[in-house]
Length: 73
Image 1 (tube, rainbow, N blue to C red):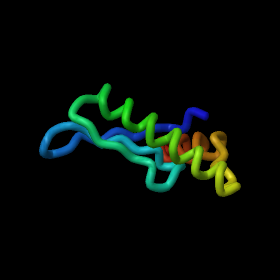
Image 2: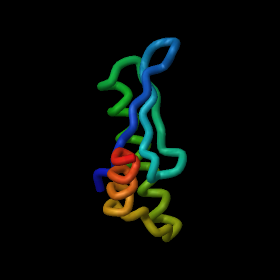
Image 3: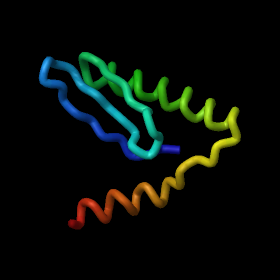
Image 4: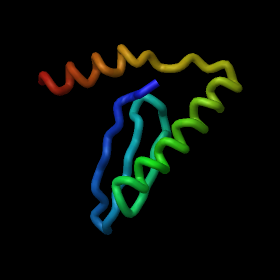
């Protein structure tokens, strides 16, 4: 699943990226490319852990609807 990603620049340099739908799924890197590569690793581990523990995954459609609602405000 391709959940929406939020990227923040860090004051000290580099970036932080997160997938808000997946609580705690975030990564940091010096470049955008490095940050996104790290985030994909973290996302895969997050999803693997959720599957192992039979956790229900957040609905992609619900997450997109949240973003649309926030951007319309």
